[in-house]
Image (cartoon, rainbow, N blue to C red; front, side, top):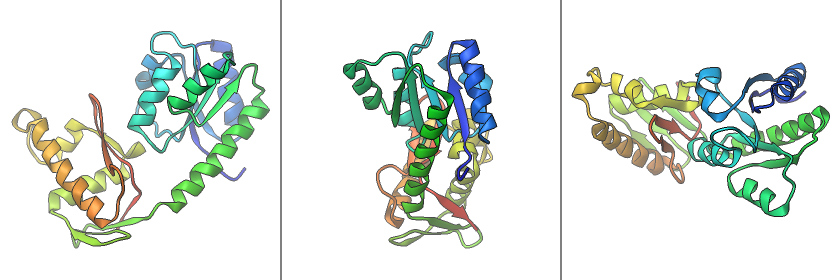
Length: 229
């Protein structure tokens, strides 16, 4: 196997979820399961996710809504939707929500494994195609594909912890702690101003789109590859 991934299987059918997690684990992947979208935080926690296998018919938040939310929060994540719905409009809805692949049940573990590996290779090529950014913490300097920019000590610290965090994602209170102040003495609007300034410097260095995205109700995620030296 050429690519091993951290995979979360969201499936409310207990036996099917267990079989899928076991099959992916036997293929060498690090796989865990959750029975619904609402259980993700409890079951997964800080587990860094590379790829999600999502059933469409979930209790509570359905697979379409979950895929859309995940795609907005983590643009680089892989999403495979597995469902018994096979109508063309349902497939289109799945792809429009952010799914990379749409497999109809019944799906063999061999087909799912092949789909996971094909998507992993595509994700790896995309990652390798992205320009790298080098953060020199000692010099407080970020070198990007277009330019180099100087950072403040706090900007460098924020970028460093985001680059090293699981999934390149941190909650607001964790970023606020970097300021050395209590959350009560440091407004989230102040944090947003700091993120905006850092985002502008990343784009000056060569980042495209939004290099740091807000995760609604939680915090922020770094969407580019930054190497910390």
